[in-house]
Length: 328
Image: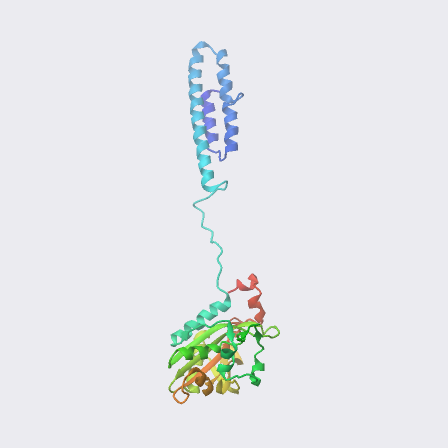
């Protein structure tokens, strides 16, 4: 084979080489001891003198060119490996979207709840998970030995001399906030609460509550009903009706249970407890109950999320099952 044909074949092959192993095989094939160019150079002695010089010059020129090209190719492959390793990248291919985490469904709905209440003039405040006996009970008109304490199955902490506990409701922030702030005021208090009770599809020892408090000169049940009706209408984005039933809570008087109906909720559903703030709660906070009135409410955030998304088991929120969480 003439050197010109060998050169054309060699450069065609060289353009298809993608790694160092293939490049080394190529070098041996053409420049090794038994390589094609080596064979041509060794056969020069058998050629007539008239051809020997021409073929020798062409072959040597091709050999030098191949050596230079192989070195250049080697450097290109090495640089490519440094940049992207052994994989190939097609810069024209569409990008692959990286997996991203997202907010838990309870957090998503909590943000919506806060947004709605803030648009209605309420301030969002937070309180500690560990609370004192005074703010969890005494300041809310639930003194020691009061039978209502049995309603809240309490996780008591081994502390002395002050008795501490995991808060059983978000209501302690009513007293704490009123002690440090003058009325009029509107607040909601979202947060975790803890109850020493069995877990089933609708109950958990740890869950989320949203406390609400509004205090002003002339607050009535009608104000509460209007606020809560508007809140649920905005949250569920549909017309909602509210029904109040008599109830009992030590920190409100009168007290009532609140039912909701409307849209996809065909039947009445109990949604929260509420009432007009008890005068003793105002006194404990340093307010004169003759001058101020207010309403307070507490609702379970987990229950609202279950209603919003049609979830029938509260335990699903806390299992960490991605098959469930990825749906939100």
